[in-house]
Amino acid sequence: MIISCTTHHYKFRSLFFCVIGSLILFSCENDINEVNALNSKGINTEEAVNIESYLSVGGKTKARLTAPLMVSTEKDTMKMIFPKTLHVIFYDDSTGAPTTFLFAKYGIYYKSLKKVYLKDSIIGTNINGDTLRTTELWWDQNTEMIYGSKPTILKQSNPYGITPSQNGFSARQDFTEFIFNNVNNGIMQQDSSATGL
Image (cartoon, rainbow, N blue to C red; front, side, top):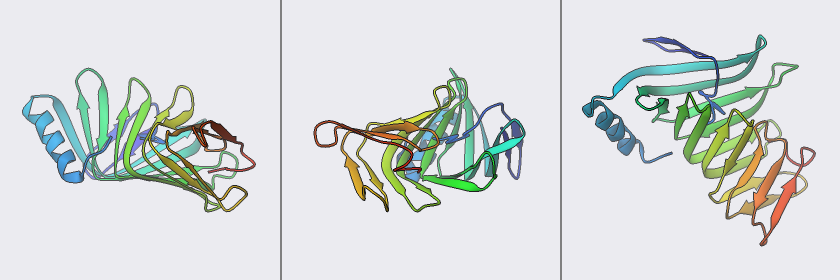
């Protein structure tokens, strides 16, 4: 993964965050206070603005992340914190065309764990207009899954309409299959022919 910004260049081997790179949230004001608290504790931190990051595998671009601010910290594990929103675009392997768009107000990428935590006003949409909304989710690069335990809504044009889940979901990282927890006191599964978010 290559992150370019106005003041620094960072190179990393894996994405999302960058992502779905991708990935805790308070209000922006609280997030900045959290960053300041890290600095006051003597934890090594580095800031960069106007972030643009790419995940490439086998010479093909998989995802692109942009964010106005990234704070990199290193203590027990290296973390890249995005306290002022982030946007991710996922691309089709064969055509290179955008397929999915993700927005969150806050995210953290745990480099050694290869996991991303996203929080606050998460919106995922695909080119068909299907929309996923939730307040918290994880993206696990190791298992190539995304999942969350908070209330989630998937709005589709066909065939299910709106699917609410009070206890979260799990899905493939390409959003082609969803399992919703405790929908009508059970589990409902939707495959790629129904979703594709």
